[in-house]
Image (cartoon, rainbow, N blue to C red; front, side):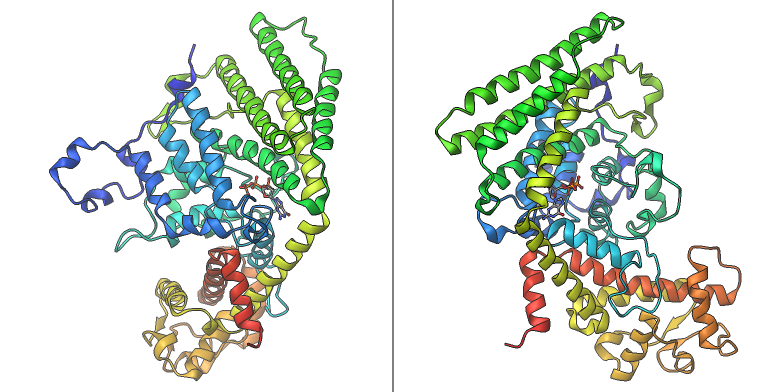
Length: 541
Ligand SMILES: Nc1nc2c(ncn2[C@H]2C[C@H](O)[C@@H](COP(=O)(O)OP(=O)(O)OP(=O)(O)O)O2)c(=O)[nH]1
């Protein structure tokens, strides 16, 4: 029978996209021979020492960091996920460095103001919000923080002179992508409408996509699966903790205790141990699951009587974590023991690939987790105060999008250089010449205005395109502008058939480069930076 340690990931050089890119990195001091650093540990450290990681300290989890020092931010949430993941990895004897790398990077693509910022960028990038300005409804693949985490690590964070990203191993990127949903709807509701987030819009090379095993909506490594569940455990305990700290919610710790005790009561009443046909192993497992719930209930009943409020809150958090960790550990071992995994098949040339989600809560743990989550949604996330915060956040992010969309020169020069590089690449790809170099720096106002109109699809400056800034080899003079614009909504992702399609595709790609540069810039901001930018853009001193 196999055990969890048989499923541990071991690093191979081929796990990185650029296999030999590390050769020139170190100082080559001979003493390095004695200092062994694992490759997954190296991945973790690359993420740790990135600027994007440090910015997590000022990105909201539920609340803004300005509300108080004890509320979770994306950084403290990330550290808690990392600690829970490492514990589980150690108990299950799998790769601790790998889980830590995945955990440290999992939320690095979050926007300012957490999920609210994410929703605005998603609407803009999928064409559902035209900001009152865009001319066409174009789905550019949407926006989701786990996809963006992979993008930040694979493209926008730089380590090498001549290569994008941090060159992390596929196991790290795959685990980060799968820590939460990768599809808009549940598998059973999927109509393949083509409206899901488009991974091709988030990473630098299509070959990388194969290493992300997108056919599976869970991670194919045990380490990735651990981080996904540790993320849930971390959220349940800290959302309750933060909610109890927020005086405006008037949540009383006694009521929260009573609620969770009543949830456990309902679960036990609804599902009596009744398993005549179960194997001995299954009976033992189920009994243990019930016992754990009972132990949790007893502890909660005792601590509920405490007169010390802080002790009550801290022990609630601790007991919830402990219950879920034990439940996941026990259930994962049980799942592996009954999985009938064929280790020779599982160990493919890329490493150990799991086609089953083995790291999970028990059935009872899942029900308790769902009940606590729904309680948090009703009592905390849907509260007046959080809605006020989210409303303001949405307003700020939307106003930033509008300002930059309207006039990109309001973004700093390094962002404009990125935009210029992105469009230069598209121009080259489609065989069109962008004649001026450093157009945003050296171009005349007229050049820049023309280019921006084209990027926004507001206008196609046809005559100018054979002029000083752009040389276009396609014969578009014969087509009127309206017929070209008409094709834009039709062409979408269809194959290019002729020069006219190719030209329209090029226009769309430029429009994507424009919007995604704005989106990358905003997504990278902290809450504070976004607020400051908003003030600078819109308020009179
Ligand atoms: N302020 C605010 N916070 C929210 C909202 N929705 C979720 N949150 C907070 C609660 C949790 O601490 C955290 C995660 O929520 P979800 O379960 O929806 O997201 P996911 O599984 O993708 O988790 P992750 O963001 O990756 O940690 O974000 C919202 O609408 N407003």
